[in-house]
Length: 345
Image (cartoon, rainbow, N blue to C red; front, side, top):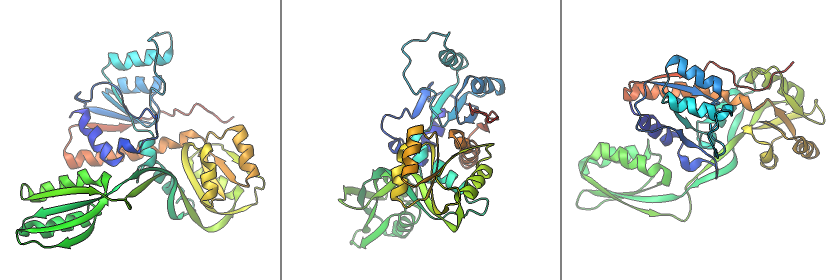
């Protein structure tokens, strides 16, 4: 199969429009028209991961963290990072990175982390978005379709496509309108095409209100309060880490509302406070930001950036599901390497 088929399907799940501004998400190295036979899924693209890809015969690496956060001003192979680029090119390994679009996608990174907190009897309830990101504008789609197809089309749009219906009949066939978010429009059109073929037409106009809001991070309530210390210990078990950093003025403080944001989320702690969270799970907390968090009375659990490696199993499972549905001739495997640069001693 072509790499573009997997990329296109993934970008339906996590569109590039969801990515944070200036984030280098998307194709990193290679030609999307390249035929790929084996995809290696990883959190990071490091020299050892590239060697793993070469060893197993992978011709595509699908990563969460971009391999190129900054543009290279030369290709001096004395630099291990730039030598890695040469290895990738020499072995015709395409690299694609799904970063902040995966962070903001519904059913993506931050939902996986929130779901992980469901373990150890934490059971987060009433989970909601934390940091507002991309907002999909609402549109009104007016559909004209032959009478024999109208029921199937309406069922599809109001079910699978998540539209709301405003119907009125015409003499020739039937016409009705639905409201939906603009990011659902292309999939809705494709779905109706599959049902109605050439026997339909549509018009779209933007609406001033409505639409769909995407978020980075999640916030929810514990079923019953627990101490900050007990919550931190539970996070150690949930995320399989040997140690973590706890920012807390009182480890016996009882908490009932928790926010979680994968990666480097220290700068978003005011949004956690605004959402009513008493505890915030995120990585890479900066020293002075930690002082500000303490002053604000927020308990922060920092299990590190590497907990985002949860993406390896989830993405692999997702890709294997699509592979079966679409009969792709490609093998998808998760990297077996631990790319966490930190070791607790």
